[in-house]
Amino acid sequence: MIVHFCLDLGKVLSPIGQLGVLAAYLNPGSAEAGMNNDFEFVNTAHDWGSMISDHLPDLKFGHFGSIMVPVFAIVYALLAFSLLGEGLRRRFNAIQKNEC
Image: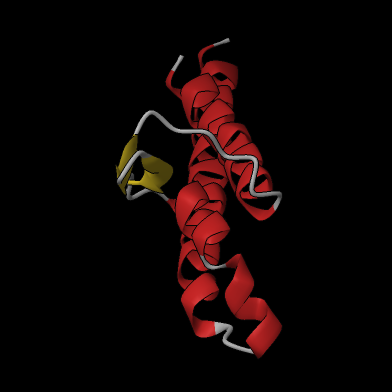
């Protein structure tokens, strides 16, 4: 069960980054703000997908540093959980073979 959790968590992190790049990331942390009946949605969430979508306009000006932090965080977490799940799977399979 732990093995499947780690492997599936790595699979869930990939769409988070993809939706952030497409700027189609919807989160419950948005609020309406405005004056004089002029409302706009303001992102109040601090997660990796929304950070990517917030900094996409910076790529037009060549500012790659602001978008690379959440991208590297997603890649690092994806690799970490995938390698952890694969290592646990191999370890439990080796233990199970020795018992037989």
